[in-house]
Image (cartoon, rainbow, N blue to C red; front, side, top):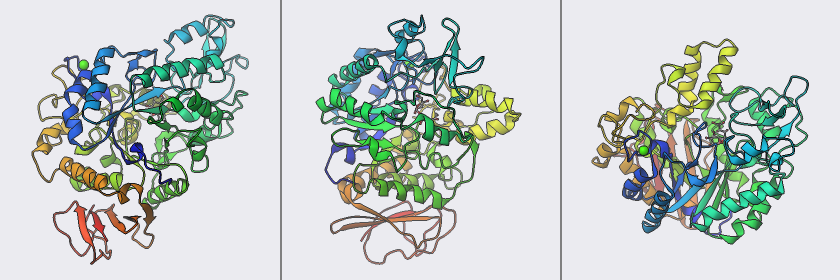
Length: 547
Ligand code: TEU
Ligand code: CA
C-alpha cells in the first residue's frame, strides 16, 4: 500500500447509524441532538472520525438510502442547525465527520423523479432510466437487490424505470450531463460546510450498461459483478467528479462502497489524481452467500476468511489503500457472525477488535461493536423493520420456503441484527430513549451496555480503548507491511506487521480449542484478551507481541 501519510490512513472511523444511536426528544427515533449529547463518549473511544449513515430528507423506505432532498436534514433527525452544531462539536473535539452520500439512486419522491415520470418529453426524463417493456414484460431480466424485477412499470407513460434496489429508489442516470452537474452541486454544498469525508454509496453501479442485456446467470452476486457494477464509464464519471468537486477539497477523504468491486478492478476506483482514496470491498461479507444472495447462506471456512484479507492486502500492495471492517448497518453483528456470542462472547469480541485495529488498512468500527453488541432474534417477519428482509420473505414464500426457515436465515444474516438501538444503560429502554423505540431493544441490554462497561477495567469497551491507543502509538500497525503466517492451524489467524525495526506478531485463535503455537519467547506482550500468557493459545485468545 502506498506509504504516503494521510489522516484517513491513520484514522479509526466510528460508524453511527443515527436512527439507532441516541434519541433526544422521546419520539423513539435516534437524532442529531442525541449524537451531540454523546460526543464526549465518542471522543473517549479514542477514534478519529465519525461516519454518519444518511441524514437527508427521506421517506425512509430503505433506512434513509432513498433521498428525497439532498439539501435538507431528515426532519426526524433534526434541523440543519443541529447538523451545524454536530459538525462543530466534532471539530472542537478534534474529530472528523464523514457523510454518507447516495448518488446511484434517489427516492421516487425526489422532485427530479416526480418531474421525470410526468412525460417522455419532460426536461428531467433522462435523469433516470426509462425503457419500454418487452410485450408485457420488463425491459430485461435483472433482479432487484430487494426482490422482484429491477424494473417498475409506470402507468403514466407506459414505460418502465430501473431500480436496482427498492421501487422507491429509482437509479439516477449518470449518462445525463445535467444530472452530473446537479450531483456536483450537492457535493459542493456539503463539502463547503466543512465535512471531512464522503462515503459514496453503491458507487460501483453509477455507470450502467445502457443496452441493458439480460443477465446470463442465476447467481445474484455474479449478476452484480457482471452487469450492475464496474460499468463502461465508471472511471470517467469518478474522474469527472474528482475534477469538478473533490480536487477543490484536497484534505477530504472519499471511500467508495459497492458490491462487485473485486481485487482485479479495485484500482480502477483508486487514483491519486483521478480516483477515490479507498473502497469498501465485500470479499468476506459475501463469502457465506450462495447464489440466492443474503438469505441463501452457505458454509464458510477460516481459510476462506484469511484468504480474503491476504488477497485484498495484495491488491493494494503497491497502490491504493484498504478499509477494514467486520460489520456495519447492512450485516449481522460481528461477534455473532465471526466470533462466539455465547460462552466466549467477551474473548471473541476482544479478538475481533484486535483484528480490526491491527490489520493493514483504515479501521471502520460499527456502533455497539465496541461493547460487543450481538444479533437480535426476530420471532416473525412482521417484526422486521428492513425492506430487504420483508421483501426477501415475499420472494422466499413464493418459492415455498416456510416462515420458520426464512426467519432462521434472517436471524443469521439480516440487517435488523445491526439496527437495534445502542445499549447505553441497563434501564428499560437501554438509555436510548424514554419513548417507544422505533425498533425493539435487544433483551441482553442488562448485561451488555456502555455504562456497565465504562465501570469495569477488563470490559470489551476498555479493551477497545486500549487497542485503539496501541494502534495510534505504533505506526507499524498503520503503515507497516502485512505478512500472514501460513504454517498455522486453520483456526489460527496470525500475521506480522512491520515497519523498519518495529515488528509485531498478531495471534488470533478463532476457535474454542487450545492451539499449539510457538508463542515467541523473545519480544514483549503488548496486549492480550487473557490476563496472563500460557504456552498454548487458549479459546478465542488474541495476543500481540512486539518482537
Ligand atoms: O448497500 C449496498 C450494498 O453493498 C448491498 O450489497 C448491501 O450490502 C445489501 O445488498 C443491501 O443490504 C448500500 C447501503 O449500505 C445499504 O444500506 C442500502 O440498502 C443500499 O446501498 C442501497 O442504497
Ligand atoms: Ca428523536
